[in-house]
Amino acid sequence: MAVDHTAVAHPNIALIKYWGKRDEKLVIPNADSLSMTLDVFPTVTTVRVSPDERADRVTLDGAAAEGEPRQRITAFLDLVRELAGRSEAATVDTRNAVPTGAGLASSASGFAALAVAAGAAYGLDLDPTALSRLARRGSASAARSVFGGFAICYASRGISADADLNAYAEPLSVPDFDPALVIAVVNAGPKPVSSRAAMRLTVETSPLYWPWVQASRTDLAAMRTALRRGDLDEVGEIAERNALGMHATMLAARPAVRYLSPATVAVLDSVLLLRADGVSAYATMDAGPNVKVLCHPADAPRVAETVRAAAPGSAVVTARRGPGAGLRTR
Ligand code: DP6
Image (tube, rainbow, N blue to C red; front, side, top):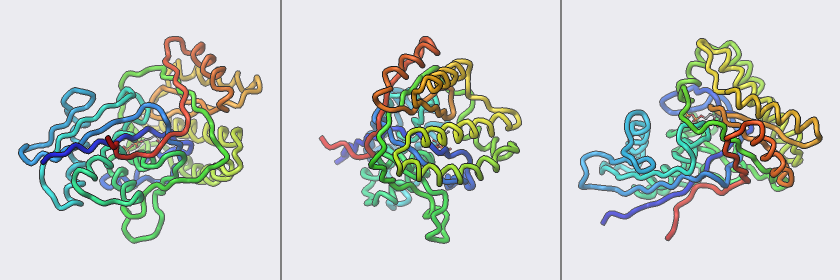
């Protein structure tokens, strides 16, 4: 009998970014990254093994998936089937509480939820590390959304000669740090270039790429210390420079990739003014124009009001650390 397996996962925001792969097929990053999983914008995915269907049926936010999104999901299902030694088609229904393709890390929550739901549907019995590796094959940032709170994603942990086994995320215990993240959705439309294509172009053409990777390694070590200390100013400074550096690598790509819009820059200016006023507020941006501002929870209302005024018309949502991916039990 066909049974529905439903999983929920949340996006994560990298404080030390992942940008660029050393293996496109296995989706293996060039460098380690570090993130906080959020408690907003969940993805809910249901997978049912459908032996009577000839091909996978994939629905994204209520509409039949087409093109690249469909291809990425069916390729992921092929991988799950290969691991399970099975061949039946699947029916997949995915719902995002966040606009897909707007640079709000929906591929992270999407593939984390799909890994959990498809793994359960096809009877894979995966420990959290194996689940994280599997999610990574869909999207490297998804490896981190398997876990709640803070997570570090290793590009190469060096336990095996097999590159696939060495790349996975694990939770990072950060007991003394519980910030707020004010998200300014300045533009919820689809992005001009997919992050996948943009990172490939950056690796291939940007003279700033490898220096940034090098700096990122130093940033990661400093970030771990700052998180352990629970020092928001230090965490924020490192996260902000790491994100701006990542965007600099893209701006130096040929042709340049520019995700930051005038509204992004207006929000960045407002964050500087908040800091000048003594508020600990630090910005980070992913492959899109939206800005996420790290701050003390007590300052979040003021930060939200300030960024809303800087980019009128933006939706502003305040997030905290959220849970890892898991099956929804009814
Ligand atoms: C800018 O994980 O979406 O958000 O592995 O090609 O699917 P693929 O890329 P993806 O890239 C995320 C990049 C980022 C930074 C980050 O989340 O670390």
